[in-house]
Image (cartoon, rainbow, N blue to C red; front, side, top):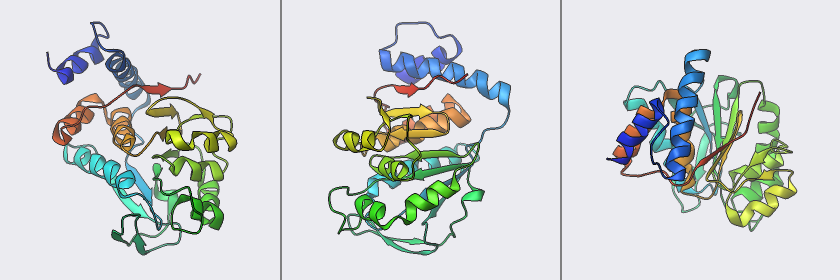
Length: 246
């Protein structure tokens, strides 16, 4: 049986011989369906993605593509590229120039995604420079409010950490930066995606696909997330770690 068919079936009845990661996805899908029925409309509608000079292209392009495809399957998702400095041209890590036209209006977001970048040299554009500059961490810290989901891809978690948003909470980042995230107070979990309710972090680079697919599944159900996988010709790797909340 095709994996996606199996997962769809398991989302309704969580039985069957699934691989551990598939079983975890299936169990989570069944739980999410129950939560959605109980809590009403999804909060994954208005997604703002924070760009900065030196941002890794794949870190933001992968979730951007996932969310756009999900919207074409009927998920009411609107993704907006923003910078904490307002409209301007961003030069990404490989030299791609992105025109960011939207203002910084975090009050209009349900989810804010922070991608990563270079953490080794604070004199070059990237995460290390942005931590030293302090604008993004200050903006993220000031933005925090109930029901707003903060998410990160790869070393973007270090910007959340610099804002004081990971202290004492389960989280992850690129495996080469986990020690730094722990120094910022994060409780490191070895998983591709770590979901702690209003804080959702993902590991290195390609895990941005898993992050966005998980957000789609969490907000709009497994069927759409699996349809997006099919279009991308991609299958999720590993399991999502979900923190227990009472």
